[in-house]
Amino acid sequence: MPDVERSIYRNYIDEITPYEPGKPIEEVERELGISNVVKLASNENPLGPSRKALRAIRHVLQKIHRYPDGGSFYLKQKLSHEFGVSTDQLILGNGSNEIIELLTRGFLGAGDRVIASEMSFLVYPILTKVCGGEFVAVPMKDFRYDLKGILNRIDERTRLIFIANPNNPTGSYVTNDEVEDFLSKVPRDVIVCFDEAYYDFVNASDFPYTLFHVKANKPNVILLRTFSKSYGLAGLRIGYGIANARLISYLNKIRQPFNINLLAQVAASAALDDKRFLWRTRRLIQREKLYLYRKFEQFGIHYIPTQANFILFDTGCDTTSVFEALLKRGVIVRVMKAYGLSNHIRVTIGKRSENRALIRALRQVLKLKKSK
Image 1 (tube, helix red, strand yellow):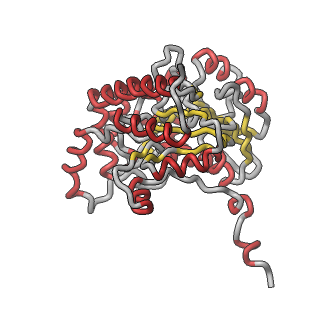
Image 2 (spheres, rainbow, N blue to C red):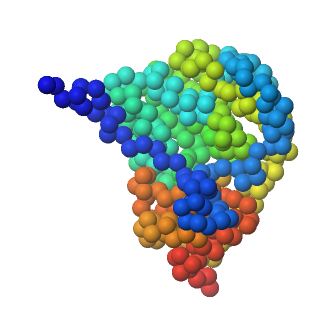
Image 3 (cartoon, helix red, strand yellow):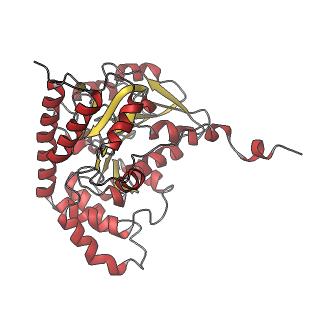
């Protein structure tokens, strides 16, 4: 009798380690019997969603018995006006994660290669393996993407390159000059995806304007953005991609119908109109980032300067016990062992009260003393 397990399960999928999201507040409070838990693990907006988005959601609640607009017409019109691109250059996803999945499903076959960094978004290697592809992880230099190293690994089997900019979990970025040089040398039959989920938090003057390459109609460049971070709509799962019309048309053939629910469409559309909310979010993150920098420096904690709404720092010890000790004190953080960083923790930049709770808990757990 044939081995059933061998015949129906694919080894390359069986070997995948699933992505583990940050613990939700409710689960921690239930498990530990504590309250007022601070979650700094998933890079969510500490201000919550825009009030305009909430009003838009309430306005359409009685219509949720109807299917949503499968083409997201009105939201695409808003995005088209926002970025100066045509609507046929836009694709909406159930989070930008779904568009990453569309790219891997659309361009990878067995044995095809995807290149990214060794310490970048874990979804890239997972989805590569799901499609039977081979993931090539290029080592970082000083916690930054090494674009020259990536160029050197391109071969005839390479189909996709993912560049998270700013990068998750390091918060580092590649500059405009580096990107211009890189794109001038990448073969036109290799898709380059710039994953810019944290774009709205960037304040570096030399950050690349990748939208220029899309507007120049480059056939192999796509950039991704999301409403999960700066717009505070993580629970609704909505993101978008911008590329040339031919690439978008190709991806739409794979996309599920009605992949963007009604509430997500109207909330995202309203959020785009709330410029003041976006300004408040950026101001909070920049101010609180400097606060955490100062505290880390006072206690001698080494951190990686960030262009995102999170900070990666070195605890100086294995983080397993640190994570548990912080959890018992009501602070949820993210350990980085899945990225090969056994001593590092990534924390979302929160409100002042949340950041103070973090520092207070770190002082207790790591037995920190202020530097003289």
